[in-house]
Image (tube, rainbow, N blue to C red; front, side):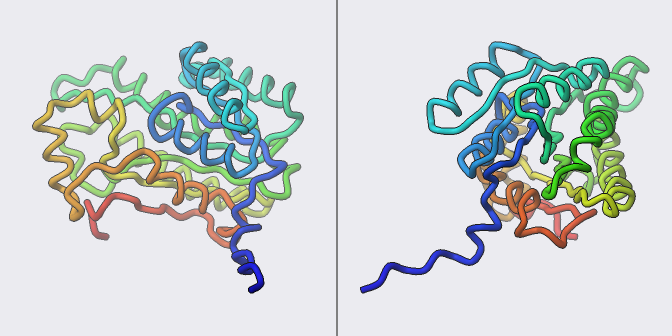
Length: 259
C-alpha cells in the first residue's frame, strides 16, 4: 500500500526560513506560540523583560531541535524596542513575523485610576505594538511572507467591568490592527489579531480561585484554555494558509462571547 499523500495544507504551515519576534515570549501564550513557530521551522527571538527567562526559553527551544535566541526587552521602553529589532537583524539578518503578545494586566476600578497607571498600561499593551512594527517595517517590507499578529483579548467584546485599563488599551490595539492592515497591505504585510478567552497563564492565576472559576464558567466549554490551544489559531494567522486574511480578529475564547 502506498504511503498517504501529504496534506495540501502542510506547505502553507511551514515557517522554514522565516524569522519571528515574539514579545512576552518566555511564558504563557507567548511561550507556546514561540515553541509552535520554532517547531514549524521558524527562527524565533524570545523577548521579555527578564533576560534569564528569555535565555532559558530559547535554550529549551534549541534543545528540542528548534532555533531561537533570547533578547531582554521591556516593550514599554521605545529604545529597547529598537534594540530588539537591531539584535534580531544582527543575529538572523531579517524579520518576517512579529507577534505582539507582551501585556500588562493592571486592573484598577474607575475612580482610582491614576495617570501613571493609565500610561504604563497604554505603553505596554498598545504603544509597544505600534512602535515595534514601525522599527521592524524596513525588514518586513523586504519579506515575501511578512505578517504581524497582535494578541488582544476577548474582554474587548465585553463590558470591560473592572478591567477598563486593560480593555481600553487592547481595544486600541484592535483598531491599530485594522489601521496597520489597511496601510501596510499594499506593501505585502498582513496584520491580524488573536482574541483569547481565559487561558491558564500566570496572568489568570494571579486572580483568586473564585475569579478563575468564574472565568471558566463564563465559557460554554466550562474550562480555561491551555496556552498551547492558542498555537493553532496564531500559526494560522501568521502562515500562508491565511494569505488572504488581513485586518481580522480571530476569537479563540471557548464560547465566552458570541458576536
